[in-house]
Image (cartoon, rainbow, N blue to C red; front, side, top):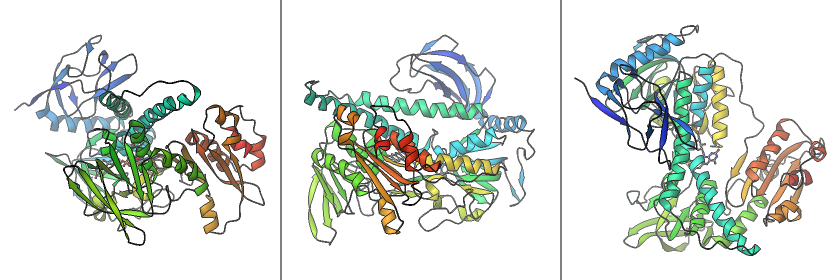
Length: 571
Ligand code: FAD
């Protein structure tokens, strides 16, 4: 029985037409999901189009030089041959890596558990976010036979699909809208922005698909096998992959858990109402609500607030604690808070949303003050819930592998990213705070190197944090709040951007740069910056900390003038 399916060119963002520059498969080839089929090129970029399913190619419908657009037919594939092609693809991987000592073959008997498996790998990685794909690629570069498992059809995890990247694409738009409007004070008026939401969404989707498509190509180049399905452990050396219609049993010598996190939900809210959204819903940009309530004044909530404010929504933020961005020093957050107070409709601190009810006019949020007094209610067109993220550690049947998961879903690891089961590693959001992509990637690299037998440790002196709000807030190392709480001796130097020529020339003098240093050795202990591009500027401070620089090293380092980077030197 054959199951012929036509593979079409998918949506590749706001590009109308692309040219086929290479056809990577021929008639009769067995293909695996995510295997690159054709390479296409536009005036902006080239990308490889991945196979949406496994099967055997029965006809190739394009050739080099063809101009094609979304929906154009690329190939016909017999998907019924998928089982055969899966086995062949795995066999190919085993063949290409047969030179490595630890290599194992298809249909291995997983020794430790005694379970019969369909295939076996030196390393399986669960989750293809920034932690997982970095780990898989690094391990493959080190010669390991790697399977990368992702439950969604595209690679990239939260960061590329519904996190860092789409939010920054929209924040860039917000920044341009605000800068254009601010130009009126300089005598330059552009008029009201005309917002084409479909086109803006298309731009954001294009950025995502360029990056996720690139990952599929990188996986292929490195001969990393990719499986799409939900992975769950069945023993310390095996797991099952639920691919929908079929379930595969896979054996492994090492595993890396990179399963990430998901938005926290507050019980009792009407989640079946599409007007109640999380950050992924907010990034979908379905409409521009007239009044938007954001529950949570942390980084994600405020970034989305900046986007919707610039697009024209009246934004209210409600935050349970007494301050925005809890955890960051107050002097750094203050300039942001001052600006947001002017731009947003309301900022309610020390307040929580205790109820949400839906009616035809909108969602009615009931507020409760910190002392439990009723703080009234208000109606909004949409409500964005951004109260944090919880790890996915307890969705993996980890106990079947003997891996300890705490009651919140976090998995503890040592500084080599090993869990309590020494050949199973965990990285990224699932191992704890800070839940940031750059922490996940560095942990992924460490785990892969250790799994490959290298001596590697994850022991950075700091993981920098950035709120890409307007203005940006960035900090690293010791914070003043932490130093005071733990009685760590420090001295502080700060430089207000009102005295920076560059800050004045871009009319953004509200910023601040501060440095904390050891009173004896004068070594840098921590630093923070608030202002445009603070997220870029903080990297110098991170390097200074890692290199053990003291404040004289910074002051003797010639910084270009006039730049915002000078503020670190001036401080
Ligand atoms: P994830 O990216 O969460 O990836 C985990 C992957 O595992 C997912 O693709 C998931 O589908 C898959 N998975 C889970 N369980 C299974 C299973 N059983 N089987 C198969 N697959 C599974 N961080 C920054 O550093 N900078 C930012 O600017 C930033 N902005 C953000 C903005 C938003 C709106 C959000 C929500 C987050 C943002 N983050 C940012 C955080 C960042 O996205 C995460 O820290 C990062 O993605 C974590 O990477 P990870 O590899 O641990 O997990």
